[in-house]
Length: 357
Ligand code: IPM
Ligand code: MG
Image 1 (tube, helix red, strand yellow):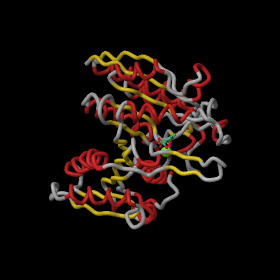
Image 2 (tube, helix red, strand yellow):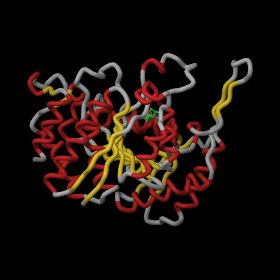
Image 3 (tube, helix red, strand yellow):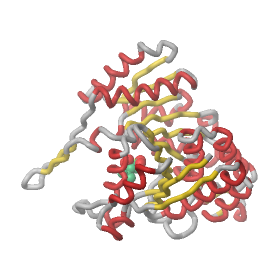
Image 4 (cartoon, rainbow, N blue to C red):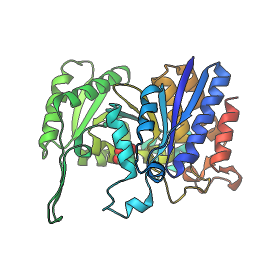
């Protein structure tokens, strides 16, 4: 198979981790006889520094033409502490999601058995948890009208959804539930929000077309609690943009660390693959970031965009193997991990590449 992949490292540890996502793709290409070619583009703080624009036109043009995108992370502390900044790195990510029509963000939460001890949640509560989040990605307060009063003392972000936006992501989630355990939980705040009442109405109507799927509806506050109390009660979770952003960071603790979680954003065109973690400016440049989320994002790319299931499984098996051999990055190590088994970004990346060679 011949495919072109656009690598957008972005900011902070994004640079470090995508290096290893790319090297893993190269290793897969060699092992399975695929011809992967690469291009690179700027987005985020690095793009602002170079061009003044968090999403330069050139990046968007390349993104429209490529077969899949591997993205690193976005954000810079400078902006986190400056709410008045007009141009922000995150605008690049939001714009590319909107421009490419990436309305569904799939965030699988799967715990590698070896990492049972890495989470702060009790192992017996975690064991066997396996959740697939469908987070809506191009609507909600993220894209609704933003306002600030003239005296600057009042501000609002419009939480808005239209029927078609709920339908298209719900369809994906229902179809996924059909081939998984046939359980779908739609999370909203329909007891308070009108946009959630529309969301619930649409999902209830669509549930009639999927009689084989058991559909439940849960309020976001309750879902946040249930997720930690009993993660196994969830299988496919469908939710809106903001709720999904928050709930999936929480859910990352089920997988041991944010450093393990990959995501796929799909919709109208090209697939966009990225770790759910951010730019990690506290650890950027230190060579200690966990590259596994980027590497597992590559597995999602192979599976979803290229339908290369065997290749995707080989990556997951290599990660599993490295963990079984006791290797850990700092974020997934615990008190029992011997010092010589704690690897930096490069050593962990090399380990996975070696296991795939
Ligand atoms: C994510 C991130 C982004 C989001 C930020 C960086 C804009 O937190 O992908 O989860 O809020 O969607
Ligand atoms: Mg987030």
